[in-house]
Image (cartoon, rainbow, N blue to C red):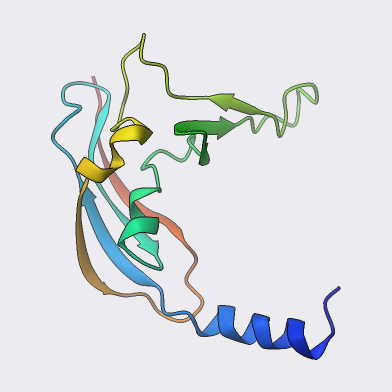
Amino acid sequence: MCVTTECIGRLKMVSMIKMKIFKLSQDIVNGYDTYDSCVVIAENENEARKIHPSKYVTHSRDGKWFGTYDCPDKPELHGKEYESENIDRLSSWVLFQGIDKIKVEEIGEAKQGMKKGVVVSSFNAG
C-alpha cells in the first residue's frame, strides 16, 4: 500500500485528471460483424484511439489488439491473453497499426469518477 507523501501526491494528480468523452468512427472495415463507431472515455485523443469497441478486446501490445480470457470454469485459460488481430481472418475494427485512421471527435467532458473505456458501441451484426 502506498502511504508516502510522494505517493499521495501522485494519487491526487491521477484523480484530478479530467477525462473526456470521444466519438470514434471508421469506414475502413465495413460489412457484417464490424463496428462502425463507439463512444469512449479517455484522457486524450491518442488514448481514445487505443480503445477497441469490443469488450472482448482488452488491450494492445506490440502493435496488435489482444483479448483476455474470462472463463472461471476453465482455470487453465482464465486470465490468459490471446491475439485478437489476425490479418488472415476478417477483423471487426481497424487493425491496431491503422489507429491513426480512426476519426476522433471530442464530444464532452466525463464526470468525476468515470472510468476509461467504452460507453457504447455500434456493431453491424451479420
